[in-house]
Image 1 (cartoon, rainbow, N blue to C red):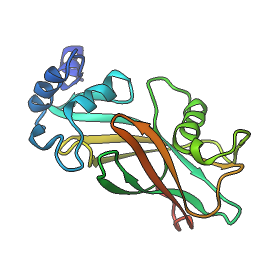
Image 2 (cartoon, rainbow, N blue to C red; image 1 turned 180 degrees about the vertical axis):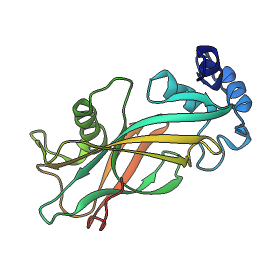
Image 3 (cartoon, rainbow, N blue to C red; image 1 turned 120 degrees about the vertical axis):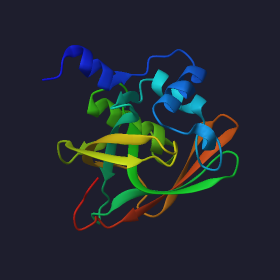
Length: 203
């Protein structure tokens, strides 16, 4: 049986106070940050900001860095039974990236899923919705865990804990549409499409 000291050695959270400390912590955890901030990869400062906002937790497990993110995966259905997918993002600097995911929102520490749901709809879709829109829940959350590499943070293994919820949102366009969010340096343009549910939903 592992002792308390052994457990703390094999798993410890990042608790530094700056992006510079985070960069050193990542390197100790086997992550090469040389590609961060290049192409579609985010910067170490952006990762530090994410951790500071409690949108993710960074741990060392067995000496390797691990990012842990709780994600609300909101499956919004239209009248045809199709699911709303985020198809593409166009960043303020003109770069674009394909997404192909349902409405998703990182949950902050100890945030109830229903609060994350309300926040996701407001933050992601408000520019395309009427002021009096309503959200109707179709089922209780289904949880699933997945490990994968993050396109945003190369070399950093991420543990995603998905909280999948199905709902309908009144007033949402039933054909492809776009939304905009104000971001530093301009606006984020997001393109949305409707797709048939996969035979076996895995997210």
